[in-house]
Image (tube, rainbow, N blue to C red):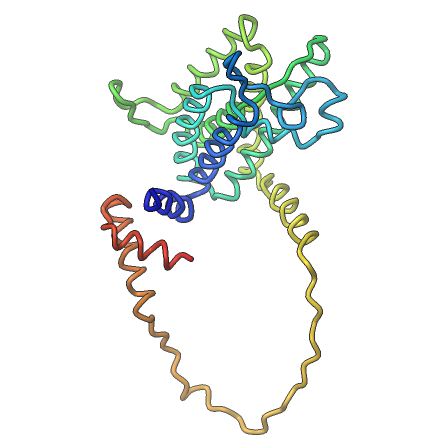
Length: 288
């Protein structure tokens, strides 16, 4: 069992941002079962300080719910399909853009979609809550589609399909169901899709909105990070000039680093599953 957890931790550590977001969603879902799942009614009852409520008395007091709701899910299948789509959309997005831009789009689209849901339900006079990563996932998919609409994607049992065909079908389904069921969820989906489109258009014009998220994260990191006092340093002046041309500039890798490089090369060529148990354990220990 411990080896399984070691493999999970290693894959989280060496995985990209899509992998990490999926781990966070799955981990929080498992954590929420003993905390918020009502077994008698077979449903989750998330508190208003985690799920996003359309009631201003709630979201004004708990403004962080505009992005925490995007890490919560109402059931296993809700989580499963969102994570499958997140993995699909995230891999495509990271083909063209950076992990920082992925993270920025995930958070900002969640906030934008949450605002659209809260405002729409407020003017409709409906008080309800929303959870799920669907809006952020659709935003990532639409963003990739806006950048490469004619890109071919191979689907199981179907074959090659243009990316914009897949995105168009999902958007049409949202529009068709918006007045039938889960109106708030479909409003958030379409708002997330709109944000993904605008995000890419702004990025193509030189405006990277992901810098907003990066600056906010850096602000809080610096805010809670203790400041180190700069110690007084006594400077000694060496009158003898060193001959820099005689100094060797060759850096020799030690044996451990060389073995790590060989294992990483093996992963890139044959995948993580091709590693032996000893190689996995060595890579995990080296990562520490």
